[in-house]
Image 1 (cartoon, helix red, strand yellow):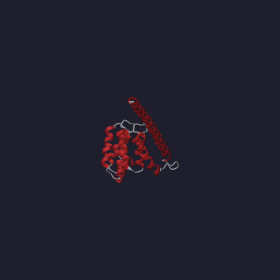
Image 2 (image 1 turned 120 degrees about the horizontal axis):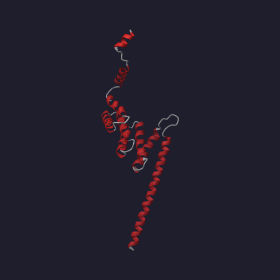
Image 3 (image 1 turned 90 degrees about the horizontal axis):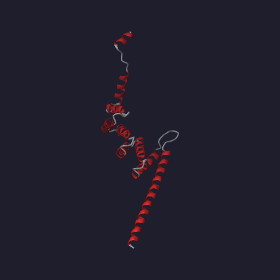
Image 4 (image 1 turned 135 degrees about the vertical axis):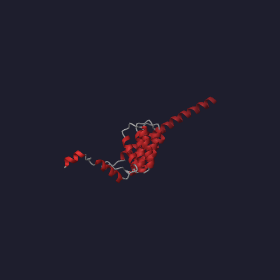
Length: 188
């Protein structure tokens, strides 16, 4: 009798685990399909403008997928897209949070370096926090010294405290042709 009870219990446990996995896979497929549908509606085909309402629905769907299925191969991509869309919507703090999570959760991902740069960029241009922008630009240049965006990070660091007027003046100064003494005589 005891053996029969144990066997039935084991059988129930096996069946329930199979069923929950099946339900989980179905929920995952449904969420993935919803994301695909929302992505198809995200940009207006004629104007290429972001549909704000669709974006506001898509970001939570991305985050739900990432939180529910963090090991899925789509999760890094969805998290990165959530950061990008948040950035595009002007939601700087939310964007930074997603980029930071991306770097933490998927440090070996090929876009981890870009995520760090983007984090600095969002701090500089959306959140308007110059100190954190400099911190993350510096971290980016130290961690990825050979990356093609290092010169951009260095320029951002060098110019972060300058007003637009100062930048224009510097640019104009650099663009002025230098007149050496020989050229001066040639003109006369």
